[in-house]
Amino acid sequence: MAAAAALEAMAAAAALRRAAGAGPQPRGIVTHTGPPRPRGPLPRTPWTTRGPPPEVLSRRAERRPVREQVELDTVTYEARQHRVPGLARPRFPAWQRGWHDPWHSPGPRYEDMALRKERGCFVCHQRVRMLEGVRQAQWLTKTKLVQGLPPSVLSIVNDPAHQLQDQDEAVHRAIAHARLWETTEVAPRREKYCPVLLEDLIHLCRLMTMKYPSLAKRMLARNYRIAAVWERESFLLQVRGLNGILMNSVAPIPPVASKEEILATEEHVLETFYPISPTIDLQEVNVYRELNDTGFKDGYPYPHPHTLYFLESANVRPDRFRPEQLRAKMLMFAFGNALAKARVLYGNDPKVLEQPIVVQSVGTDGQLFQFMVFQLNTTDLVSSDGVKNLVWIDSDQNLYEKAQCVPEVKKRVVTKPAGIYGVQPETFKKFLALYLHGAV
Image (cartoon, rainbow, N blue to C red; front, side, top):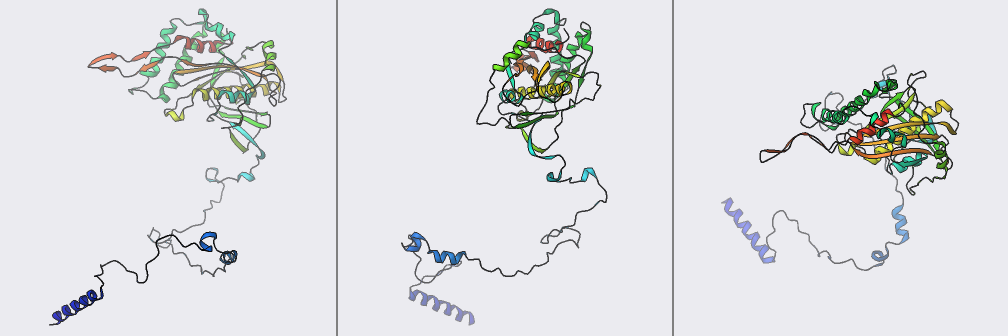
């Protein structure tokens, strides 16, 4: 009976709604009573066209007093000694060791360091990639560029008496050893074969020691650090840090350019690249020391820099220097080694050197070679006038065209066996000539 009465009541309520003209209300939808909201644009009133009056804006912009907030203690999981979701992470005071540990010390702030200076110094280190390449390095080092190798080196290249016996075959074996035989990998990585190739080529050059005994008075130095400071117009510049493998010698390389050629550089005008700053991509520091150091102690038996060898052996292409950037790096560090040696021999006063200092440089990525001969004529580098330094560059010389590590097979027929293709002997002749320069 109660169920029947409930059903009758529900039916009566539905009949009343239908009689009132209101349809059934769907569940979950909230209906609003009253007139409908306007859907068109707002009416054009002074407030909608020009905004509220200034007195209303001033009242809205007034700062209202902030109510006092009661600080509540943060509930953490420190007492439970384990992480609890919903509770804050506890913060503990820094632990004091009670003694100075240099490996775990934050160190002083930059503002409190003893070597901090107000004047910034622009540093060139081994990872600096110059945007303008050799042009930028020329301006920074006050250097005139001459394309090709100097005549004293070309005379060694073209003389068959200064070559090895079966030289082409020996070079081919050296390349094959680095690219094919040194590792059991199918295709060795660049960081593996590039140093091996350089060592093999230098070993071939050492075979000339029996013919020229003065070649025995040389030494290779790795992981040495150079430091050289100079001023260029309003900039303080510095070359420092690790760089390539340096071959030192007992006797220096004789000057490449004559005195007439050196004096003729006064008329040369250095190229600028305005609006780009000449110090772009150099690292600007305020904590530094103005130091000139060759990287070797006094009394070192091989005091004169001879040739710098740079390896660009990064496996990932974005990490490698482009050839233009590599040549700029070679020029900067060849200049840095020559300048540091000039400071030792002639002091820190800027002057035109009585005996120019020559430093050579060779750069490679395992296939493409860059050759450079740099001659430091002056240490007066502030102004762009006067005598300039000289550099000879022979760029982009391929030692070989391709190293086929895996044979090409088409239709079960080997169309191209594994091996070294396109060996260019002229490149090694230049490599050997730079090694022999100063001894023949």
